[in-house]
Length: 245
Length: 347
Ligand SMILES: Nc1ncnc2c1ncn2[C@@H]1O[C@H](COP(=O)(O)OP(=O)(O)OP(=O)(O)O)[C@@H](O)[C@H]1O
Ligand SMILES: [Mg+2]
Image 1 (cartoon, each protein chain N blue to C red):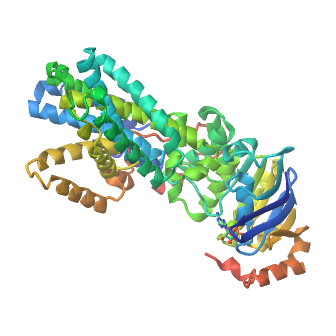
Image 2: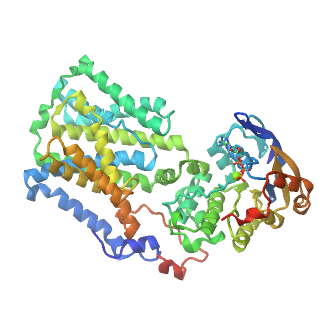
Image 3: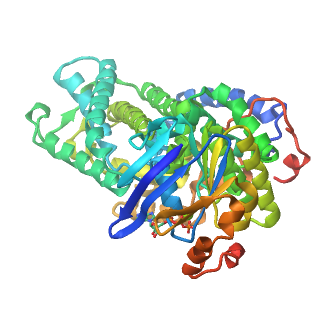
């Protein structure tokens, strides 16, 4: 997958000016950036929720910016939402089933096995018959990834999959993402928590001022002047942000 | 109702052998249907007439719930289809002297065609615009009927064929329509489309992000609901026996649907059943207080909503985990850790 010159503005607010990135199969690309940098906006453009003013999004060799939300899911573009958007009156299993049935066009019967296996993989099989609305934050975050995985993605886009979790909970998410990556899926992982990015990604990109400022090995990017400037420039230290509930 | 253990198990989900209630449920339901079908043998005429109303309003409620409760389409225009049903019956039997049976097919066809045509403009709107749009369309239809020579303008029709239908026969028709609506919603929810609908009910745009086609699913719901409401309209007017534009296309119809669904429980199958029973009984009672009957119904609705914001069925489910008609999917048996001790413990 590759993104070229992606741009979007809301009125006079030019959120993305020119964003470029590339993602390979089996690779995890971290995306960091201060609050309001446009990380979620970028993801919404990729999945078809927002229409960009310009740019290209090439997926499986084809520019897919004209495709609808559903077409992109079925092509293999899975995502999670920053605030988990599970179907609260449906059980964890049914949530996963929705992804498996509609994300891939399987019959309910065929999708059932996949939905069940995914719950095993994300460590939720003990709670598969609980309504999603009754799950705690960690479980909802897990389920969010599970439902996205159930759609059978070739590329998985994570929007703060570890946001708001404690250190040991983050480790659980890291474990899941690692398994996903090992299965050959490309992952774009947006996160505030810089520490997570050090361990969980192959490369990290900084999104700030509407551009992909730098991109490289996690350690190099984290210690770069650009990251320091972007985060201090936004007025908040990156470290204090970890305390968000 | 099986207030026994049942529901709690169901939600806690101990898989394995299905419990006593689950196994016996089809039998209990079948017995209930038989008891209801035999009601004309043991109930008074008044009892039968109340039964007729309950089942017809149940049908209206189910169909409105299919829209508002599952596909997020809050329509204030479903009276259009009640009116289409009523007028189809009048025209087919009075103006053309054809059979009542034919009215059902024509009402279904006309409802389908009308729903399809109006879907193009109103499905371009969403949220409150959709709601207002449906209402305006139905008001327009009312005005149109009042000025349409073919249906004798505002004069209306006596539906004389209806006089020849006995109360028990009408009751059985209403029973079939009411239970049929409930069964229809149940089977829809058990189908692939139902899985999509439940996801849409909980979070529409998240459902789309998982691959659910919103437009197609909602349109299918709208068409099914409209056709069935049209068919219900035919039976309603076999009972009312007199059709006039103002009443047939009055928003009152939809107001009762809203009342029934909201007090019973939006987005539940049992909700419209309970809601219809309460609505019809309350309305019979408030007939004794002409003038303030609407106020009394309003107060009752507010009271129930304050006590049970998610309707009666929502409250029952929240407290006891009880569902008469479970649409819950079960995972297929297979590998991996399945039964955890905490499964049973943490309910
Ligand atoms: N649909 C929209 N309409 C108008 N403005 C929007 C819309 N979506 C996002 N924005 C604006 O775009 C900017 C970037 O928002 P975005 O949510 O992408 O930030 P983010 O990088 O994800 O931040 P955070 O770390 O807080 O999640 C914000 O100023 C926001 O107000
Ligand atoms: Mg964001």
